[in-house]
Image (cartoon, rainbow, N blue to C red; front, side, top):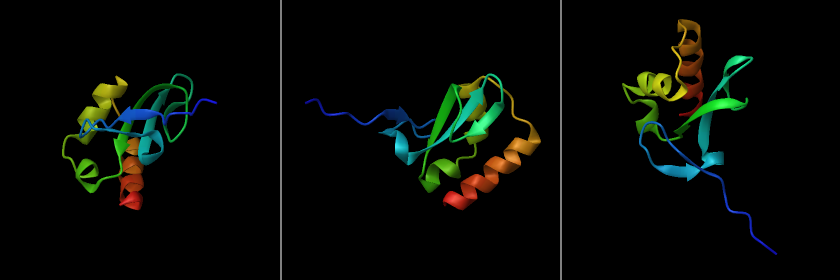
Amino acid sequence: MTQKLPVMRICVSCRKTFDRSNLLKITNDHKKGIMLYKGIGRSAYICKSKKCYTDSKIKKKLQKALKISFKPEFLDILERELQSII
């Protein structure tokens, strides 16, 4: 019987590899737009460390990874989500 290996992803901020369950997923869904934790399309991940959330360049790194520019409304939602995790 084969063992399933955990799905590993890289944090956009610190560039370290983590198990996907320990990361915040931000997806640019091709039909629904930007989504948190779910969706199909280009995705970026942020680890749950305070250093990565408080990174001053995190918004720019996410925009580059998702190949999109954020609307101010989404940035407010992202800030609230990050504060709830910390």
